[in-house]
Image (cartoon, rainbow, N blue to C red):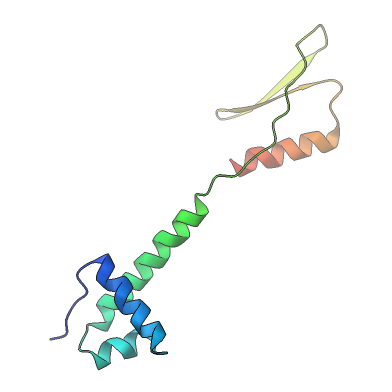
Length: 105
């Protein structure tokens, strides 16, 4: 029976040692009597959590203060909880940029 990796710290140590030895995680585990499936499961889970951390990094979207609402007509486009408010003087390029920003949310 091969030894299973019990925790994240041990998994990281083993993966680092395999890389330093120039071996695949499976080959390194076999040489040391470690369950390769266990080490591989940790490798997959750790890479997913690291990818998820990067994916959740905040993105900045430029916001520009709108002029006070006057007598000119205003249009509000709502998509779920998000909204875009425009006047008759909006530019097509601005609307395209705003829609792209909403899609990113």
